[in-house]
Image (cartoon, rainbow, N blue to C red; front, top):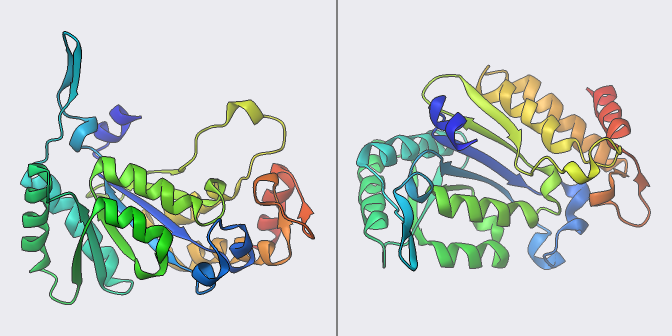
Length: 261
């Protein structure tokens, strides 16, 4: 997958995480935190950083190198700022600038790019504090700009506080309309073909494709609204099931959403 993303020049991973009101009770966070909901987009740099840096073994030690260029940081920062312009115009830029030289370059570069977007506020936040704040008060975040490693971790954390990783889609894009769209979870081979998997993340990935690659925002919203409507009628797959709901399988959930569309 790393090679596919790099080969298609998909340097920006866009991961929304939001609480659908009918699923608020599925969140592991207490009601007083989750009652106002949250709607976050994690914008993760995807083709640089420690996953693509020099790595290896040297005697009894091992190493992985975190490296970023100014150009790599500039393009992912612009992606986050453009998304923020269509939302609440606030970007939290996540780094570890108190320790890492690569993060100090990250913060300097983001500050310079921010001058191109005077209408967007930038808030710098250290990654350990960001992880803590996500569970203390997730509603304070809207667009989170992160490096590859930090984004990998924080977006999974954000996904779980929504209630289930089976609910979240993602887009990997670049400078063109070409992109990769997929749920953020794995393929779950242990339940393949058993009519158990939650198809919602895959369905919402199609909504993201319509929005980001084709600019069909109304059609994307139609899919999102259909998912919300089915959840409001208390239909649930096993991963999001709770007392008083109707349990359905993969096929049934897909059909219910299609019927709403």
